[in-house]
Length: 298
Image (cartoon, rainbow, N blue to C red):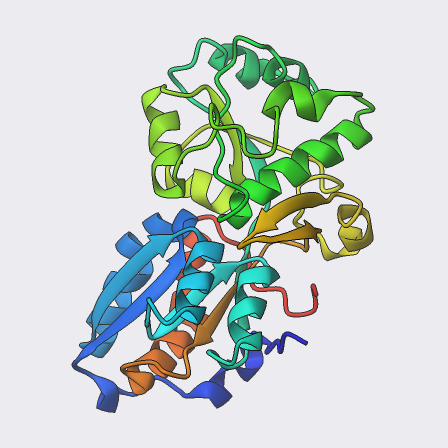
């Protein structure tokens, strides 16, 4: 079972101390967190501790597999959704996973898109009609390596059921790993900003961090609300992951932070986790559009 600690318990992991100043900490994090880590959390932690911050932003499940394979050895891993954190913990590479933030799925669109005006004026579920237009360029990440790519497909499935739209998922996404739509996570929102794609489904926190226009989705489909956990699990994906065919289901969108057991700088790792969970870290996360960590969502 994935061990979850509340923010109130984060102090038992190790309170921040100036005695840990100096050296460096390497944090591998879900690629959608690039803005908040590189512009907010990283510089603030370095200034407060004197510890140099090194960030690695990639697909969270991909990072998890690299950690388990011992080809990546960060001090801290910050993932989104339970699956990557669970993989690392069950393999014996990390301690308890601390919920440090949360988010929701939203529909983000390019301000340069010819569909921008239509998205801006849409009401209720009208966004589904625009998204299903065959002329619209839809982008997403690879569900085989990135939880966000999985959550795009879960959201489309839930929208199809909620709005009673037979065939909606197939019209928008095609096959699960449709190469015409899939881009690397760190570049996806940049492509949206530049108008290379018209729309995507993405984490609200990442969209706000990039100052992109977006449409909020109902809690029944945005995968943010623990109260809808049972309904969310009606969505599923069947994917071949590392040679094994698996059926996956979503959990509410929570970001988890873990100190690696083989962390090169364990003291700095514990200090970073305490900072991230503490008042200053939480204030920065909120500024970038993140909600609080939800400890009872699994």
